[in-house]
Image (cartoon, rainbow over all chains, first blue to last red; front, side):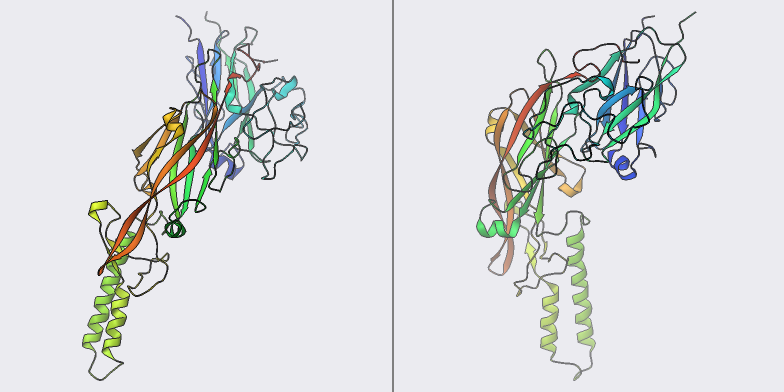
Length: 192
Length: 260
């Protein structure tokens, strides 16, 4: 039987609930996938998606209220980031580039930086990013341009959940980014 | 799927009617300030629409615009649908009760009955005739912003019917950048109708469009009061940009998941 080549993982976010509660818990995040295997935790932030090597996995964020903004800011597999302890103080994931003087609406060029920041602008800065008179950052990265997809490599240990950190951005500001590390990919056991 | 874009058209109805112009009496807002919209809260809003395309050049996301007119100087649109009719009925009932009390009052008591009658007449308020020919607002009494009836002889401020967008046209439509149309909606806050458009983001640039907005002015025609429609226009702009999609992990094309 041919294996389904693509698995979609959709993060459905109640943006108003998440920003009000300050958490993606409390039912503010539902993760679901359409994989061909028996994934566990469908509809919860603890989704374990069973995948086969060679399959393409694609993550998408979807707002419950379509007039609220939500985008995936980064997906980081836990373990690939050497030091997870300083998450949240802004130092670890600050973009490598300095803030650029830009006109609103004119976005930075697509870029990729090394390390764990995935080349995406971070909003936890403590003031070293230039702001316009209206309080908005002068740099604006259109996170909607990113397609979060990748091919499952062949060296995964079957049956062992590989957790990933999903970072979601809802508008901007110091409390606009929320993260969960409870979801995982699990490589399927080879058929006997 | 991208966020839906909303443009709020807030009209100072009283001043716009007086000036016979929406200029300086319209305040436009959208939910795209972060994405680069400019002049929020003024009549010169430039809405940023950031599109995207795939490596083969095809459009990667569809942007949807919704226009919502609101009024400065009207009863809030969130009051129940029958509010104005209900208020009219309540004032009629109160006037009948007052009249009954006046009739049943023993002779010689109280003040001059004609003064009381005049007071009752004032408390009944003014009914506006339905203007079927112009399909104006339904017949109801003139209310102020607190829901009280406005007496016929009063010059006190009254609530205006909410502004209505009747057309969207101009450069952005002629150039086939937006495809606007009016749609039915279950949301009665918008009176069951709203204007919406999809956007072709394949041709970046700044495009103007014009909204035709109908306001209603209270006029006296003989002994009757009528809501007379007044059509005015208001211009705004869309700034379309488009950028290529890229992979979030690699910054370029599809690759292996960065597991370690």
